[in-house]
Length: 530
Image (cartoon, rainbow, N blue to C red; front, side, top):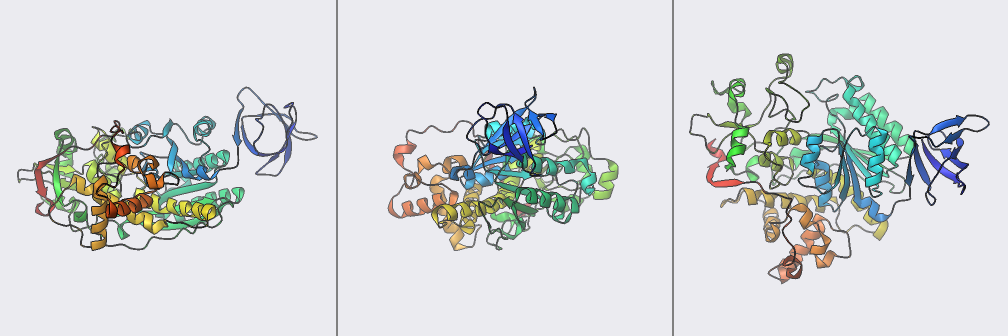
């Protein structure tokens, strides 16, 4: 139960509490830390019901104490159902620090550690044990995010709604948010979930229980980036914030086709190339023999398809462990075969080197840094990307929260959501040009070209290194975000040849735990020739 403290008993014999969800008064016998206004009490024992209910501390009882949030607590994020961290990546660009990432799949959490330094918890977010661990490690984070399971609602899933056991992921996230007493909850799922009665009723019940305001938006990635990924986002916020003002993003077409990001096919590390090559069964299924594979090819002048979790494993066991074998013939017959293929740069002309996309290719197309190396199991990384909440979308949604906090705290917001989005898009485009350097200019918009050129003086920094107040003297006394850093870089480039303070850079060792992808540029092959 979640309770408000009405009267504190120093002897810990009879604390007078009010249960939040019902308003009922009760006594609690047991140790409560002083100085907190509310508590979550898990697994207490009902000692008596009359004349007033009395709860006592039992052997399994755990207490979660809740203090009122500070401003910096709204810069901390608990990311549940995290996958490998798409939401966290977008939040990181805003200077929001993910303190805890939680997922039921340990392999996804291992990938999460490749690009984010948050604590990771392997477990069911709906269990008391996991919730208690989150509370211990969250550092009083005021924001929780969660992308709940899309299978019960998406067109390629079973569409069983609340009758699908995986629908419990939503109720588990809501339960955890209530027990942790977060002040902002950000949810993400496929767009059909918004119209599902079970989803709507569950979210409405939570908002009513918490006295939260609900704001919802549908974001289509292809309106600002050359990849299809339509998702619904919810912001549920406490009265502390008032209206956040979440709206759809404006269409931006300067990065509108795949070739703007990937101008040619790279030759990757030989181990990656081999792991991604189609096996005999895949060659037959995708039509390598009769030429029908062409409909699955990633074409330079098109928008990339929406990547799916099973893209690299429809005809084999899923590398994440969710499926021990291929998709059933019945499902393949009903839903069809989906994929996104390329002809390898090593192709000898007979199309025997058809392969799935490399993780770096898929990462940049969904809006994530393509230089991060997630390890040798490239098909596992592809399965993670298929479940990702696009960092571009998460940055847009979280930037409204960040802007609202600035308005309340300082009376103004120097970097509104649009400026954050533009800064992040230009930074991602710069990172793509590090992986795919090209003599020809792929971007026609002069303003975007200028922004990308501005970033090139810091093109060797990963996102966590870039968003570091210790690196920027002008930002050492304020919150850092990618738009704020871009502003400093622009001003510095006008006055100095080197915008990064050399006194800081020369003493700072290279961060050892972030690896870069390996590309053999001798194997370049233009996308237009595939």
